Length: 306
Ligand code: CP
Ligand code: NVA
Picture 1 (tube, rainbow, N blue to C red):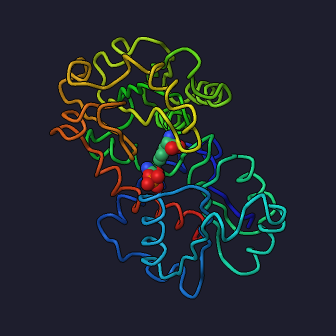
Picture 2: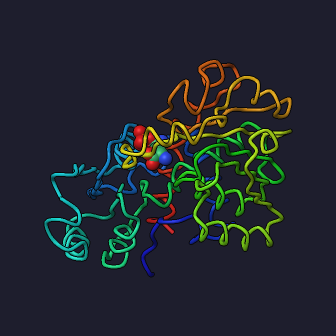
Picture 3: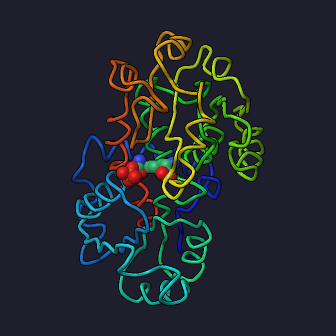
């Protein structure tokens, strides 16, 4: 069987995404399932950027599946600096059963996947964050009992998170509105992929400027940092450009009566979200964080056992 990767949600069918989500729900109920899936095996974690949720949930998940994780910090492996990415991929393929990589340039992930003979998982790149988006739609499903027809409003920077959320929404028949300032729209390629996929699932993806219009009647209000990892030099300009895009109590109240607030974390209270919203009763940010563990275990089962 050809090896599978998990690089972009666009690479997988709606049926496969639904299967992963279903499996994640089962693993949440019975965390000891598949406890020998990775017995005697190791998985390499290549991280070019810091991480709390992704690193810890992958390490814990690999352990729960019977395997061992090998964490490789930026200076250990020096992706793209010490030797060609193709050589890293081919070498690691001789030692471990999989690669989980958090990179700056998405192309590095594509190169790892191309040259590795083992599965490669996207643990965040400048282009996308598919593991987070799946944990997010799992959380939405838990709260509303369905994904089809759910309205998700994303406000702020059209970044890696937006790209993956649009693809997940499109695959699962959701309605997503994205409000960004000019110049901060999500990736045009992902918008096209999401639009193509939406035709088959009944989803809609709408880009706009006005956060009030985007949030109006939404079931889910989602935001992410205005300054992603690697953009620190642009902080001053970004804080200025995103003025008016904060999810505060007034904007959040425009959403539907059963509204929930979502954020992938880390969050910046007083910037993209007001403290009383993220720390308020409708915030589900730690459920999202928890679901990273279950969804990533399900992704590994999907990659290794089928
Ligand atoms: N949401 C998320 O990926 O968090 P970390 O950067 O802490 O892994
Ligand atoms: N957009 C953020 C997500 C962090 C999980 C970043 O890339 O820094």
